[in-house]
Image 1 (cartoon, rainbow, N blue to C red):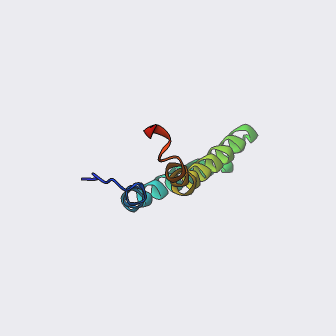
Image 2 (cartoon, one colour):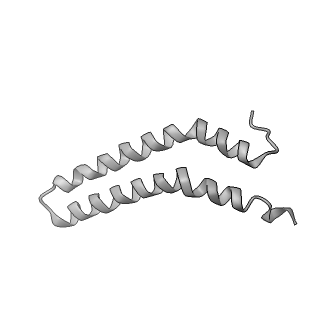
Length: 79
C-alpha cells in the first residue's frame, strides 16, 4: 500500500521494492545478448553488443536518472 503524499518517500520506497529486480533483469538480459558477441557473424556480434549496452544504460537510467526527473518535476501537473 503506497498511499504517500511525499514524492521523495514514494521514490525511495519504489527503488527499495523494484530496484533489485530492475538490476537483475537488466544484467540477465544484457549478459544473454552479450553471448551473441561470440558469434562468427559480424552483424550478430554488433547486434549483441549494442543490445547489451542498451540494457545496461537503460538500467542505469531507471535507477538513477528517472527518480531525479520525478523529484524535479513533481509540481508540474498541480497548476
